[in-house]
Amino acid sequence: MPAEGINFAKNDKLLTIEELKTLSTILVGQGIDKIRITGGEPFVRKDLMELLRHLYRLDGLKDISVTTNATLIGPYIDELKSMGIKNINVSLDAIHRETFERITRRNQYDTVHNILIRLISEGFNVRINFIALDGQNTQDILPILELAKHYPVSVRFLEEMPFNGGSKTFQKIAWDYKRILDHIKSEHPDYYKLESPKTSTSINYKIPGHLGTFGVIPSFSRTFCGTCNRLRVSATGDVITCLYGKPSANLRDIMRGEDSENKVKEEVLKAVGSRAKTGFEAQEKYANVFSNSMTSIGG
Image 1 (cartoon, rainbow, N blue to C red):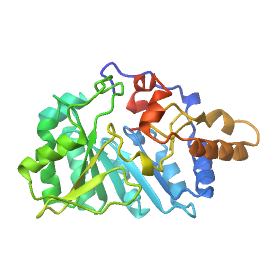
Image 2 (image 1 turned 30 degrees about the vertical axis):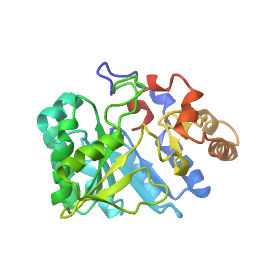
Image 3 (image 1 turned 135 degrees about the horizontal axis):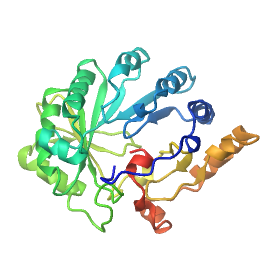
């Protein structure tokens, strides 16, 4: 989140939990078999578990995942586990307390660290998302790999994207995925590449002797665009097929009108069918995308 904060959407502009339940049922009916609830911290929605319980009961939905900054998820861990929701991404851009507090501007290090260890120890499939920020946290790249040495976690290093809240605007980055890999190689020259699913955004690796793995996500270089199959719906109903492009449609008002189910299906199919081939193509059509904050888009 930008240091100056963001203008939060009014409640009537947000999709309600009931609307999100209806929307998820429609999407699963169209063939979507994996849904990730993302943030920031999605548990700022006090009734989020109601949505997750609904997803748990949906026939055809094979995987429910959650992305969290691990500040508010603690009270819900037991129920998540009981529903078989085991895939948890933790957004963590630092492993040292000083770096963490400087980047987050919050005194939450102990909470986040304790929740992270609890998730790992209770058998969740934990992936740590670490954005490499030049001049801010790259000194933590090698130390955070110690988690993958001692625990069966995946540490994924993301290239920075020029959204409000990061460096805002830039034409190139100092820490692209090749430099991240070179930096890791200086300490671990014997790491080797792993097989990854065709639609994966991460390129994954293993260091011999480490319980876990690590990966790089070329979110600025955009080398995975050809196999990307993601569809994003924001808290306000925007349909986004590429983070570098503008929303394809807004479902909120459609869902509050007549014949909403058929119209939602039409808009979703239209969005998927007209998506840009790459993030570079999407960016050319939409000059102001980076004025948004990742907090408002959802990670």
